[in-house]
Length: 102
Image (tube, rainbow, N blue to C red; front, side, top):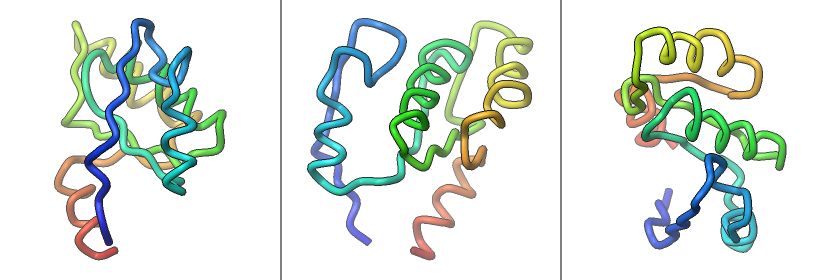
């Protein structure tokens, strides 16, 4: 498995797909699965992940590679909202193990 580390998309809103060419860049490289990490779990991460799911990507959220401003926001992102659109919610170790197996 080859990991493409050359695609970087910057955005000014909460959804990394909105008003960017991220979807185009991923589709051009035939990428079908995305792993979403960062700050803030209940806003930007959730919006980007939901946007990716709506565009047909297999979405993985990484529980211990995201942050929020409160434990309640983290709980909402991973336990309440995430399961409605993410295909998987894993730890970083679980993601690494799955990439090694692929």
